Length: 365
Picture 1 (cartoon, rainbow, N blue to C red):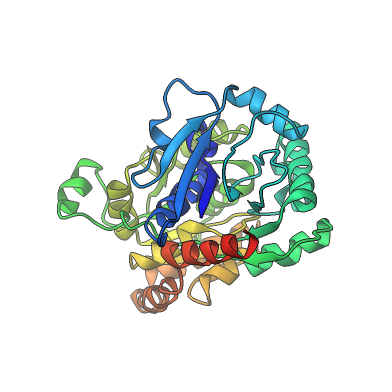
Picture 2 (tube, one colour; picture 1 turned 60 degrees about the vertical axis):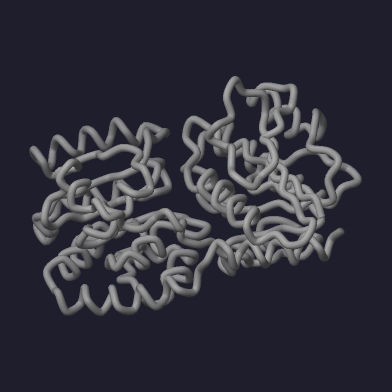
């Protein structure tokens, strides 16, 4: 079986969680294939595609259209598309206009409907349009959680099977042998709160910063990993960081998997205050590394955390401040979260997800 996968999101200026999903899923698909299975990747026209290049994956083949034009063409249902394949998988809503080849589309969340204000107007319209097309044209739809499947059926008439296939922890996300040297280079404090991800409006960073301004908040630094954000969040973060005082908030930027593993494994607690998520990859990444998690009650986060996180209401800065203070201040509570979190993280594997995808592909060919 010859499967094509669109890896354009890996080349985006802000790849985000869907870029991570695309890359890790393609990597897992490549080494769980059987017999004469093959995986072929496709992107728009770029001068370099190194960020989408993977061992064991043929390509990337570049379609003869630059990214912006390809996105606009595919939104209208035309333009060049991957070809000579048995199945095509769009791991994001950038869905190619294939006609006679079975098409699988991953829909990560329903944010364009549930939290439209966290997207630009253009982004909201594009995501709704592409999700609607996917629901109409796909041979099968994949979602990361039961919560997304339930919500998707509330906003779209999906006439094909919707299969829940979760995510996993990248094999490279493990503390390396030189962890101590990396910690010293990164100047990691003894105790800190960690936020991991791309700053954007739905991530709830405003709630987290408000929580840290409260008197009941723990007096430890906040470290943030991830690239530059959008939607004005970066400017607000800089302003709030200044208001909290010198050294209270540090931005580490985008890190390698090895550095991220060191930062995440040494954090006192990971804060995930999102207003909406489709999965919440940092939750299981932190749990696998033995870090306690405090997250919002976004349904997908609660589902993925598996009862092994401290859960607070979305947007409630007082509750978040109390939860962070409790976890930071109580070794007993923290140890319990760590213990249960490690068990929960064992439920998730990119290889398991890839094998389930191969089974889905075969059912369509």
